[in-house]
Image 1 (cartoon, helix red, strand yellow):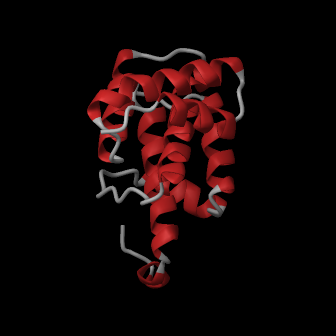
Image 2 (cartoon, helix red, strand yellow):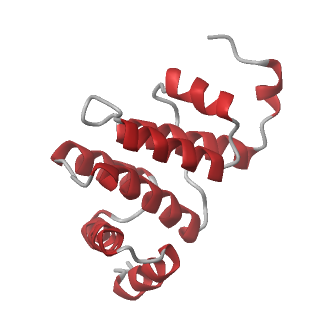
Length: 147
């Protein structure tokens, strides 16, 4: 698929948002299929990231492996992982391959290997309870292992 001329001028944060969305698609597709609940959630999250429905459809179609450039701020990296775990749990089940992908993404996002189990457990438990993202971030910072 040819790159549209204007895509050469995407703002770095916009590129990050698209990368994040591609990761969400990959998480939704971790079990080999994207069901209607996951598709609906992807659509909402694409909207939240400011993507048009055409961009969402294009990214769904071309969800390729691409270089991941994580945000610098801890809060933004946490927010992206929150979205990923929300996507993973959209169907009410968290499968082993989805957990592996989430752990890998956490690692690529710059979280220390030894803190990933704490991070994922805070996110999973909190999302299951319906906790607010900001509250979970505060909880994570309290439990965080700082090197």
